[in-house]
Image (cartoon, rainbow, N blue to C red; front, side, top):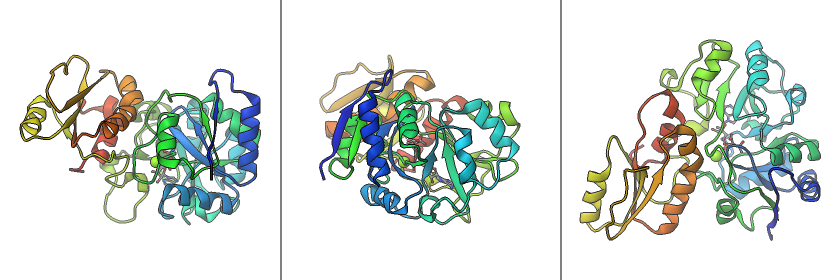
Length: 334
Ligand code: TXA
Ligand code: MG
């Protein structure tokens, strides 16, 4: 299969490209598109034959359920059997935006989408291209991140093509995504709601809207896996990665002395050392800027052919929760 690529402006998405992509979705095909977090790989969520193609293209285990993207709160009605008060508050406050809500599913949602489970994950994306596509298709769109299973999520069209070219029908290239890491996933079927995956919407923002929630550290790790995105070693570059608390320079030097080529993800002002075998990427010191650039940095270091990636870890604390979560999952030390 040849993957059709259409460059689309995020500010004024070309209606022809959007209509073409919507037609592919309505015909049961796969379309990759930008969201405000990462690129998604979309299919008609109501058509099991289309959804099964997502799993095949990604090499994703059928045990990992998909997020369904809808145009607005109204469009969730047919997909759920309950709409708790917390969902109403959160959807009103954060949609469209990077918050995914897990709710009791209706019979309209195919088993494949939910991995056979009793719940469905829903979100309304904020990106103009994503919204235009969902509206034009007039369908709920199941869309995981547009990468091969367990590898790094794509924040640019070139990342999508590197993993999925020839495996999907169409890609809408809307340039780099602004958010950079995946949405926050919150289970609102429990009381209090439970944070399943930290993301761009922080626990503090959620708690300001609905009161206290259960957070990852407080979630029992034994027993049933509530969200496979919580699996360790996910969101990982091909190159082994390790995070170092405090200054990582000592560790970088040690690896260089041992003859390894090192990719160092440093903070602005921390790098600057010139060494044979060292590639340094300096990252912003604010969580939003860092999130936006993280996957692009890891993709670039994968391409640079280094033996090991060393990351200067950001401080522990609420503001960096999602970034530290992704770095931990990307890490060889788990
Ligand atoms: O930002 C995002 O969320 C991106 C963009 C494309 O929207 N999507 C994304 O999808 O990251 P994916 O499939 O890579 O991650 C979805 C996460 C996984 O951790 C999955 O296990 C969890 O959501 N999930 C999906 N349905 C669920 C459900 N019914 N119950 C619990 N977790 C669920
Ligand atoms: Mg993913």
